[in-house]
Image 1 (cartoon, rainbow, N blue to C red):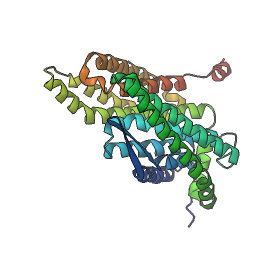
Image 2: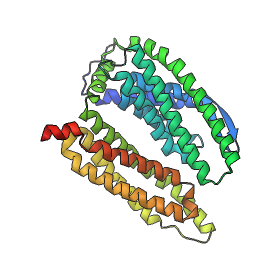
Image 3: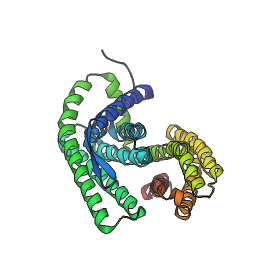
Image 4: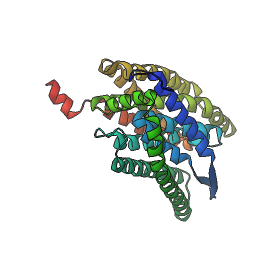
Length: 329
């Protein structure tokens, strides 16, 4: 059956994104957990579908599939505190993979770019995952020996996952791609993803995705983690100002609106999007200060650091490049 669609049919593109996101969740459940000094890691097939998402759907839709699918798995699989960082790390994994595989008019077809994209995407995730683990071990005050064992075990696990993902996803993507190319629904997504790799549009779409993801995650984190943080504070005989976090969550709703408008209307919404980005950046800095000052929030400090990094990256993407500035002059 052929489905008639065009590059402007966002519904079909989102349907494919949701399908791949569901496969990411299922693939992540197929894993072998590895306990490590009170923590845990795992070897599984989740990264296979994250890389496959980037290769088949391109950077934006592939990144959304990998990030949201992995984040949902963490929320329902007992890793709730890691969900925000997982969403961002897995998004970047598929995003980097998709950018390389689909760049240079390749449209995800040229084998050298497919292999390079898969390897670079996996390496990106390895670096981000180990960086997050390193920050957590330092904040938890582990000894140097314990930290080395923890990071060493996680490094081995994530490298094994990377090799499995690339070895399976690359040939699998080629086979699936040949079957999908006869379907106009997929060809519409190809046209959309190709256009998204056109300079400024890619920068704007990247900023939109980052702002949208950060805002949604901030709301989720406040709703899911604030009650336990307040309970810990009450046990310690202190109080935690919940209203400040709910105000940040309320502002996140505004940020979501402007992120969507930025994706749809482009440069017209740049000032509003930049304003939201700056305000959220200041709120993240304020949270980091609170997390350092209050022991009940220390375990959530990596989330604030990740949010801060995402917002700084958004500012960079929203700022005009040197080439664009010269063109305007």
